Length: 370
Image (cartoon, rainbow, N blue to C red; front, top):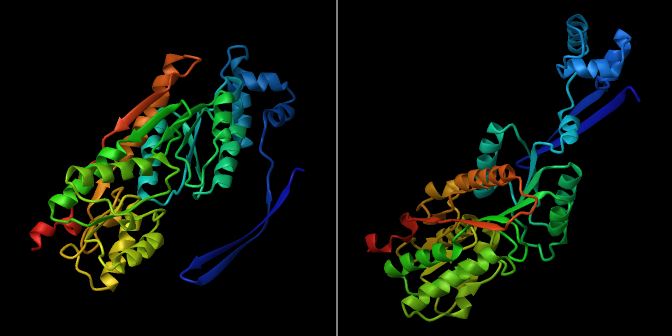
């Protein structure tokens, strides 16, 4: 068909107020091809192709006429097809659990900042923490013939055949943050265990003795590592491990709030909570503490993870762990280009670990609030 009728109805929910915009049916012109130019000028498509590719096999007069006609017909070069003929698309696919989290958006920004300078494009996919959607994202990127797929797996992920398929398709696979240990690929990670160890040691040194842990799904290595750091800190200071103080799967604001209400209702509640999953979970802790008129940090210390932007402006501001997400994104992109320049057909697994930094803020400075 030369013409396609398009009809869109867009609904936007702004605080429960719905606005519906209707775009009337319109005619969309067919994209101009080299065959259209050739037909208009009564010449061969190969001659048009050579002229558009600045080949020396077309005389200057004909070349100028072809270029003039191409401009008049609004011809746009199909760079995807051109790059495919060269065995590459100059496109990298990125799959993240949630785009709206500061950590993941900054990683994407870091990747884009580097890839843009190299003339590469990004296709960004969001799994929304869904294993099924993650598989669909991966299959879409494979079908788009991307040169590389960068991924941080979802919390629901339990089988990784779809990622093994990426490798078997000859597509470079780079894992970051949440990685699958069993897959031997390029990986860019944080030292989660050490970061958590330092955070809990800080809480203990501030005078907190009953520290609870909000942990993420233990099928993901980053959360098992953070739990290990927590346990090692308690061991260093000879503090007991209390199972009732460890709440699994408290990785959202809502789950963090629910876990906090449970912890604070204990006969002997904790005096500090380490939300090792995210700052969103820590925000849930802070909101419950505020609702119960529990003073932070004098009565309850709170530490989060990831250094989300809002942690600086809450009252009190939230102690957290900076994962250097923008730098991580740049590291991922540079790793891809370094491996590409090596021209090796066999990828040697490599792990780059970036040391996070504890950012101490008001929510844990108990010694200054005495």
